[in-house]
Image 1 (cartoon, one colour):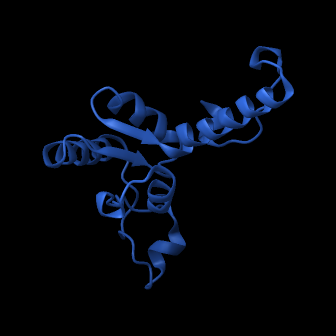
Image 2 (cartoon, helix red, strand yellow):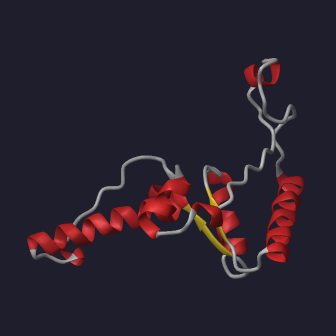
Length: 136
C-alpha cells in the first residue's frame, strides 16, 4: 500500500522502494499457540534488546544506503515517539502514524480556511481518538 502511494503520488519508482518488516515477536497467546502463525515465535522484544535491534537496523541501512528514507509504520505509541527523537537528527526517517496523519490533517485545515477566508488562529480544534497523531 505505501509503495503505491510513493509511486503514484510522489513519482518514486517501485524499484527504489524496499519494504522491510522487523518481526520482534508477539505477546498474543493465540498467535504463539497457532501452528499456522508465520511470525517470530517468541515474546515481543522490549527494552535494551529491542533498542539494540533497531540500532543495528539503522546502522546497517546507513552503511548500505546512507541517503535512505526509513518510514516507520505501526510501531505503536510506546516506541514511535522515542524512535523519532533518537534517530531524526542522524537518519532520514518518518513515522506515518504520527507525521503522515498530522500532514493530512494540516492540509485539510489549511484548505478549509482558504475556502472560508479565515485563519488557523481563529479556529477551535478538537482532537478525538487515541492515535499517535492525536497524542503528540
